[in-house]
Amino acid sequence: MGNLLDKKWYNYSSRQRMSPFPNYLSMESISNQMKDIAGFAYTAVPMVYQNNMQTIFVEEKEMKIAAEIVMEVVKNNPQFFKERSKEMKQLGDEFITKLKSINPIDLTAMTNDDLAGLFDYYKNSYQQIYPRYFPILCIETHLMEDLKSIIDKRKLPEEISSEYFTILTTQPKAMVNLHEELARLNILEKILLNKQWLDLFMHNVSFEKIQEFPELMRLIECHQKEFFWVTRDYEDPILTIQDVIIRLSNNVKNKDIEIIRKKREIVDKHDERVGVAQKELKMTAAEVLKFEIMRDGMYNKEQRKTIVSQSLYYFDKVLEEVAKRTGITLKLIRFMKMDEVLGALNGKEIKRTLEDRYELSIWLPVKGGETQVLTGKEAKKWEEKLFGIDVKADFIQGMGISKGIVTGTARLMMNPNEANRINKGDIIVTVQAVPSFSPAISRAAGIVADGGTGLTSHTATLAREAKIPGVTCAKIATKLIKNGDVIEVNGDTGLVKIIKRI
Image (cartoon, rainbow, N blue to C red; front, top):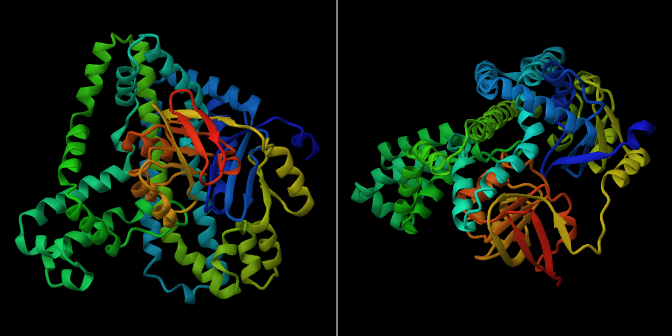
């Protein structure tokens, strides 16, 4: 353990509102996945959890080796990410179908052994699916610099180069929030054609009033059923029927329909715009391929997110039954390892252990083997080693993921329910943005995130949808920047400057 502690670790992902379940499963299997692809297994993938805040680290040298090998694999097989997406979809469809079938079952009638068996099924399926997106995480930082240099060497005016870069690195298929909005547009267009429906949304609409219009209710229910998972993000609430009603009402009152129609037109013509950009920039075949690889990787990663969000929603029923039988809260149940479930169900005392893990724990999957979990003094040693913060620093170097430079007031936003604190022109500072941040991001002038992994992160997708400068991989932004600080965000270079402290 001491040798591992001495290594140089690279922080490649931070998120809020996260528990180890089921992330450590994917980290245990990532080494084996990388062995299949790159010919070597990671030494370790430390994960730090503190009050549901998660940060994942990879050894810096190994990350670089992985990036070089995976990039070579993808160059030799440009269909690599498409093939992995196809595999993931097949596995994901089977996985979700099986989990859906659990919902009608009366779990109270199950034995403890059978209930624990559902965890084994989840583990085995999840470990096949989740790591299939890891290769894009390995290469995206490396690839990002290549993509920027391809545009920059054309020496175009900043506004024009920014537009080209956005077009070439946008993948509409990966924008789940946008897909939900465009699907909502179909309902909005029907509302505009029906005077009774329109009057309803122009005034005080309610669930009860909408029930008086069965066809309208059917449209809303179908929409919610299709997109319930877009706000889920591991442990967040799902998109409810009431949420859909509120979104439709806001769209009608704010007269958003033309704005959304323009977005639909942009999506419909995206492939055409990519082709025009490639032609106008006189890009070589090798340059075109690099942008295609990034777009394919974005879709691969978002596909994984779709499967994860839905699977965790359906599996909550199992977690809730374990919570009832053990008397342990759902929050703490999520800090169990898979091999501890049956023991807890059979009466083994584990609550204190889980409380320690929630307070601070280091989860250490080593060479694809069983994850070790450290708490107490050992965990504190790792925390001090992994997080080094210079509180006097007046700048942070992250990764620019949405071009432009902006100065504004920093507002820390850690949860979707804090959206109302974001005023027009503020700069959001967060651990990691998620789709449910979208309303706040639409008012913001810029965004900075500790975590994320570059262009494929939610922060990047949301910033680019909103066309605001963004920086991800800032690592310590939420620790160094305070509410009310004036900051400058450079979405080109990834530099975040603290101009004035409160």
